[in-house]
Amino acid sequence: MKRSLVSTLAAALFGAAALAGIATSPAAAQEAPAKAKAKTPTFEGTVALSNCSGSVVKLKGSKATDKALVLSNGHCLQEGMPGAGEVVVNKKTSRDFTLLKADGSDAGKIHSDKIAYATMTDTDISLYETTSTYKDIKKKYGIDALKLDPQHPRQGRAITVVSGYWKETFGCAVDGFAYRLKEADWTWKDSIRYTMDCQTKGGTSGSPVVDNKTGKVVGVNNTHNEDGEECTLNNPCEVDKNGEVTVRHLNAYGQQTYLITPCFGKGNKLDLDNPRCVLPKP
Picture 1 (cartoon, rainbow, N blue to C red):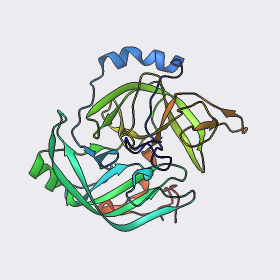
Picture 2: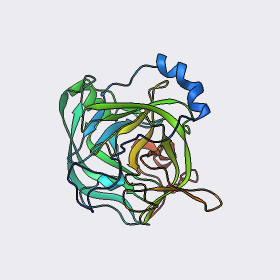
Picture 3: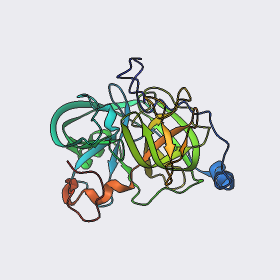
């Protein structure tokens, strides 16, 4: 996991994602014609953090007058990475994000004064509540938020990791899903495994993973196996239902985001009590 270009043991974590790993699965191969025809997502709605990437996202029930949400990784928090089992909810903070236009140029700054939700348990996500509504952002900058797909991503679909930090895109496909992905003290469920084409790098942590066909966000980029080690820091391993461990050297992963939608209610307010919400609770 890498949050930025600073290479310290504490900071050099998830999402550097230098992918050069495994062969394309049959499902991915079948998707190739669609990939060739699909439209590459633009930078519109993505953001650059001080150490990571992110995106302004709109949920299925979000209204134009709701405070906009910024999606990134849990390990990208300024306050430090949450420990295993830790969940951050409605915590006051102060953070600026550089909003990007479709061509990757800077549109301006938006600000957050609250972390609505963040964790590195079961998944690796952070959601900031900004001081601007979607309508405010559209009126001032002409920028639309990215839509969060409420459905589980599909194997073989062409995807693009869109990095606001680097102002670069990285195209590949969904190779499959890891039942459990373990890295040091953290374990994530049902992680997205990319094909070898996405050769991302430090600073891409928190980038939205966009389905090229729908244009919707299906995941958030977060880690890759750097050295071929087993389940250590910067070297995630896959663990199947039987407990068998698989190491995929140089393979990279993202965390699914469809689980977020049931956990936010009217007004984009966090609602962890919703029976359909399965995100970890404090």
